[in-house]
Length: 259
Image (tube, rainbow, N blue to C red):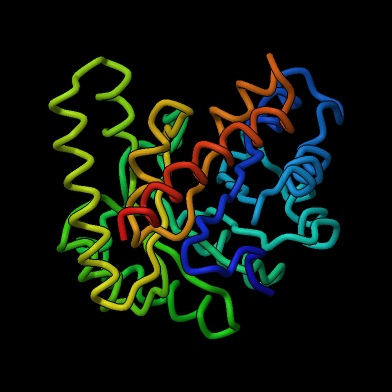
């Protein structure tokens, strides 16, 4: 199974459908259905579907993962903590990819990147087990060389660079800070690619911030969720996705024009 876009200049879009499940779980029942959202996202051009099965099941559930595994014709990226329970679930469902993320029970969303360098010995087992059955392993990490080095040493095929700080600075109107953080992401992407790692990016990206990251040539995939689900309330998921896709394609076209 592979992502649908394979041109050298094409930037893939993975859509995280977690927060459709958040709305469902706030009241209980089956509506709105995150699997239906995944179908709509696929029809609107998503190259993959991302879902984070948390230890406390606050949004995505085991049933959601089982249904996504068999009902969706796009690669499934399972975000997971490095726990034995999550490893068993990943090995059972065999998603296209597994992105290992940090997880704290009290946080509302994933805050910050995984400390791959500090947790090297613990993570080695998880990366080895997942890779051993053909699951592409990604580590969600900060834009730091030591974290990239650790990811390569662990045998991960992919790194996903955390873009949350960049987006927060943009939201705060800190133009110089935003550019410094974007430069840091650019440098980390170049470094990771030089190590032979596939580079993804995500967290907090919006219509206003996606262009800067989409224009980084080493980045081949963006993962976006919360913002798209929020915009879907006002314009529909199909419309929100197509606008995001257009923003990404415009940034990529400018990049191609500069080559």
